Length: 76
Image 1: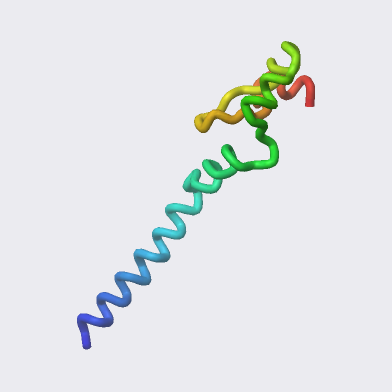
Image 2: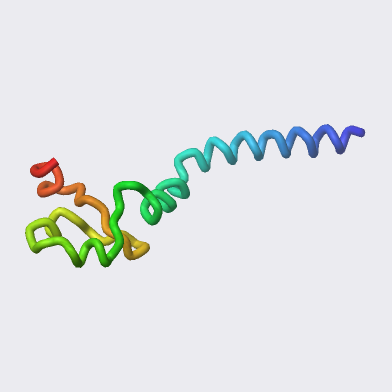
């Protein structure tokens, strides 16, 4: 009986700590990089002219997002 309480308390603590720890985990950001509304595919990127291409940068999954640097801020 005592071991069940310890195991239950440990599990509750791990779940609580895990949700706190992984709240800042970029998992949602990873999905947003590939499937988000603000990304374009490589074929859409190829259809852009040279000046518009300067506003986009390729992310880790091969899609393109608006550049978050100076040019992105300038033209937003």
